[in-house]
Length: 268
Image (cartoon, rainbow, N blue to C red; front, side, top):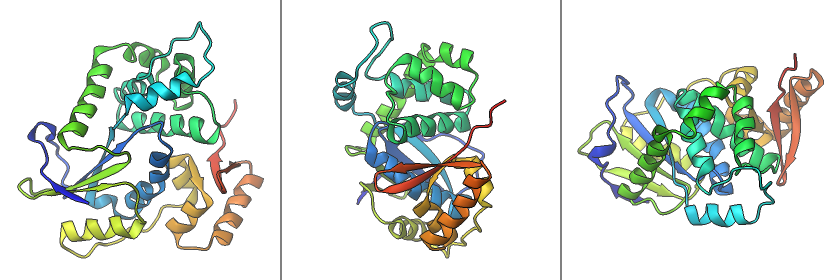
């Protein structure tokens, strides 16, 4: 864990009164970054009243190049090593929530459905599933604005000296104070303790939303994640999740020794 100062160029004026800002540096094609999701989600569910979350793409182009070379690509389909990251920034041009929906859907397609997300046609399909304005997305993915936004993320990564994905940087509202950089992944209680120490007061944990509301927000959740958020056993969580599969509300996806549950898309 490292102390650092926030670069003045990255400060964005905001009307938000939240006392903390959290920068989450992720490579969208990195499985460890996908593993960070449950921690960020639980922080949001319990303590979002205290912080604003900024997701910064910390894309390693060498990794992307290696990833792309191992894919079987249709010659008629456009591909570029930075394309998934630029696509995420293009989605963000339709709003922060749209960008997060697109990022989560991209990671879901890559890690849960093991699909190729590095080509243009796949990204258009992901935009449709994320309920974006697809025509606007097609225009934005080729725009200077999306490329510039991606370059800004890489600049922030460089200025904060982030060399590892994932990493999280905590800053409080006092700009003169040092921030704290945490590289890699730790247990949830470590991040909770950092938040409390940097705020320097007792945290009030929010009650979690209903399970239906949670799925509407995050779309895909693991059994362990649901159990952790609601403070129940894995058995109790799975029992509730199975009820929703019987009601055709969610579907079960076996994944890497655990079970993921995904909100089912309603068909017209």
